[in-house]
Image 1 (cartoon, rainbow, N blue to C red):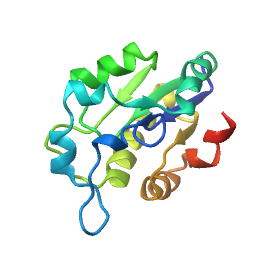
Image 2: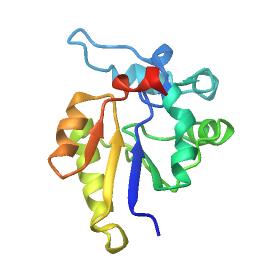
Image 3: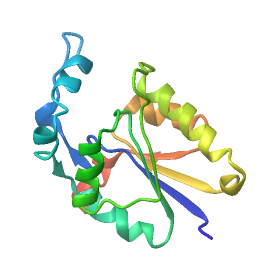
Image 4: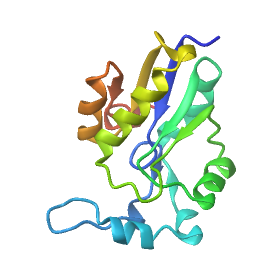
Length: 153
């Protein structure tokens, strides 16, 4: 039985998908453009970031998860599999859900970590979004900004 749960975000944390991202005038993600660019061809142009190499290593010592604000497609799942990102659990955005990322991940992870088999376990997450880090820390998850460690991995 694992004592720790290690959670990885995808975009900006384990995967570089910036070639598919567009922003609005206020600097926020252009979700319509993101959805339009979520084709299998473009997904398979994504690149792994250094932290991705640690997922399976950590998985030998902890329960590993991906928690992403993406709506995961079959191509996303195939990309993870082909690139060796093997985790115990994947939590993603439900189709049509427009909840802000931090709130979405807080609700999803709080629900998951409330399950009997995970109560009392230490949860650590790597996420590049400040809003997500702030939101998850409120429910007791240790959240690390991957920018602080990517160059050391």
